[in-house]
Length: 272
Ligand code: ACO
Image 1: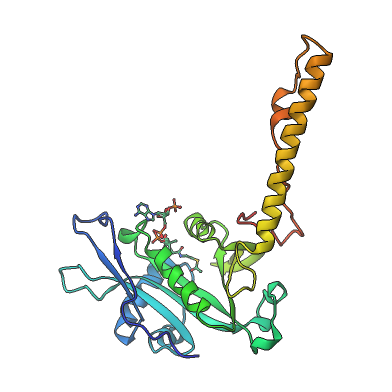
Image 2 (image 1 turned 120 degrees about the vertical axis):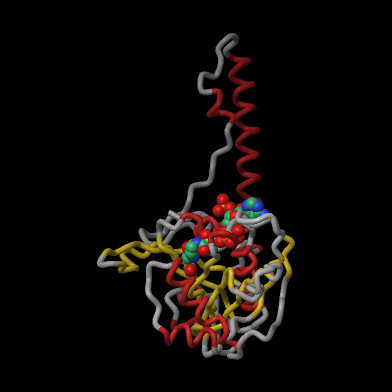
């Protein structure tokens, strides 16, 4: 699979980074060999896991890893090409992946693949500006442009709330909690497995999801009307007696979350 063929793909008009009054001009480009040192440095700074030098070589030389770099081209100090964020990912065969059971296969499409996000990071002074969101969007756009690709997925350690919020906000589905998935300094940590389906595999809002949504809405509407009618009827029959459980009568029934197993969680956007 070829590395994504692009130069600058987006130029974000951003709020100022917290460290200066400059207005950053964030651009996205492929990671190249000149990024090696900086890439290793940011990985060391941001992740509790140590990555092999083979991994970094693979990223910068575009082996079987695809990657996007975020740079601030408005930096006046000669660092305008220096990474301020990145995302790295690789292709895996859908049927060999750990989410093979969740894929809707289409035999006419040939060997189906998934994009697995390996690492995502934004240096601290450039956070909360939408850089990570844009990087993930690039991955999704890229995955969607490959007809045999069925989705983008990743693991995130269970206590990484900023990253979990990001993936949920971007309509990734949390499909599993994996107990003791990470081993860091001799201690096990759980991870969540998030998936974003593309190319009709299982979109975040498929037609089926919409039908279920509409049916639930109609059903809850009917219940509200029915409970109002019941109350009127009761009020007529029992003059002066009020429905004690007024609030409960009027609230539509909320649909229960469907927890299929201890490891698999709701098919909506929530995680356990
Ligand atoms: N103004 C104010 N807030 C904003 C703006 C803006 N213009 N744009 C985005 N935001 C907010 C978002 O609403 C979001 O808020 P929330 O967290 O309260 O929901 C928040 O900023 C983050 O969104 P982004 O800006 O897109 O994300 P960011 O660039 O800050 O990067 C990341 C998030 C990657 C998790 C970063 O915190 C990080 O690098 N953490 C350390 C490494 C890490 O945890 N990586 C992910 C591990 S999982 C994996 O690698 C597969």
